[in-house]
Image: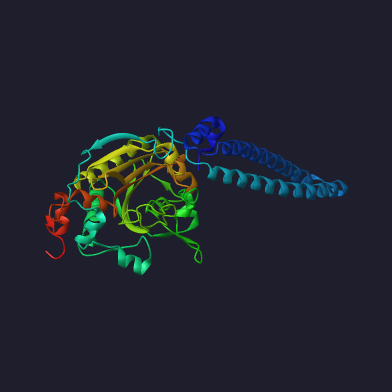
Length: 421
């Protein structure tokens, strides 16, 4: 939720953010009007309530007919106070509904849509695949690592089995991510993958992208698409002590996405799938440190990419391609030499105080006051990384080179041979 103080003091900053996103500017004017209506309604209630208290003192001091007249006046005023209270509550709900509809205020992201990102850096170039190189789905078959046919048989399109070395590679990758996170002071967490509506809404996932989320209607629960959601809800309605710096978690979870808008896109392999595993970084941070923390999370992602020995680039995502909660987002995209294109492997977002305001997460300051914290998130590893590994690390003859950093997680294995060898 956007800062109400900013809405009152600088609504144009929020309008500009909406313009950068290509979103509805009129929501800001509606919110300003709703805030004014709420303040008027609240002022009317407080005036009537003060009159009611004053009249109560007069009743206590009055006698006889005068007292009876004041009592009659008190009843009328009591009805007016109740009506004014209801009107103020209704006006507040109308304002809050509009505030929840406005996306986070963009901070530093380039203007434009999906194709208007800025390339921040490129590491490893764009290697050219050999003539006999295989796309990742064929490598998955050759290594006995991925079975999409049986995945479809059992669960439907965009499901798969990771088998044999495929399962071991994913576990190695995710365990390496957890170990790296722990080395930097993150607390590892295995999170729930079902959350209540208020948690899903609080993180900003029930707006424009709600069609991507699986809902269990009978239980009124949602399947998460990232452990960002339960980790954001972990400290909801709490006051945190951030005097020693950010509180950081690394969440390991299964993730579920409907891929509602992916018809005809990446139908082969395991790029756009309904279920996968991921290690997600999450940070609760003082707002003054949020921009610095954002770059730190990006550096942790790049460190993981270096360990897996993948060529990649970092892009600064354009405002129109940001999620509802993000004020700024960096993506790391691995180069796929067989497909001759980039594929997003990680993203890290600075959500400023947007999620914390919706979820009631505050920090205690030195003077005893409280304020909303900043929340940030970033992917440290996920199943999709296998796609880039299969295309970049394959060897002549069909084998796969194991990155040196991952070898200890695979019992010292240096080369994965094709099945049948």
